[in-house]
Length: 128
Image (cartoon, rainbow, N blue to C red; front, side):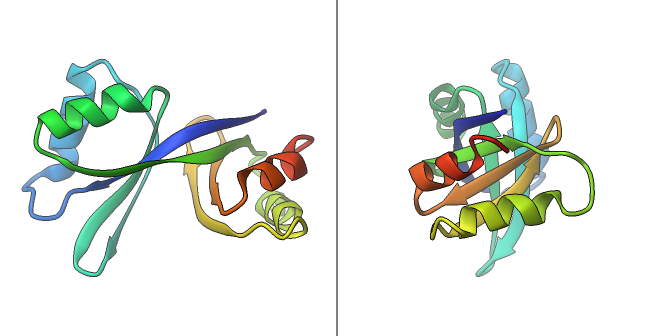
């Protein structure tokens, strides 16, 4: 299965117990976290977050004082858990000339891809 969803960036720098606080805000609002990837960049604790319904998530987080950037469209691809699966997907996208600038794994054996040309990548992966 291939679908377009929204991803946003959450900045947890300078927030004691930031991940726990973020997860609690989402839980209280009844919002499921479909995927998350955290990393440090330029002294900031940044997290890409994938949710089913992005606007309510951004709103409750902003109301709770979290710094949120985005959202942006991403592709979510069902992927087999086997050697070579990522290589096949990445090659199919690369062969279209589209560039992947974000990748992480979401729940349910799904791969999240941020690309510079969503339509080209979607066309390449429609049979993946």
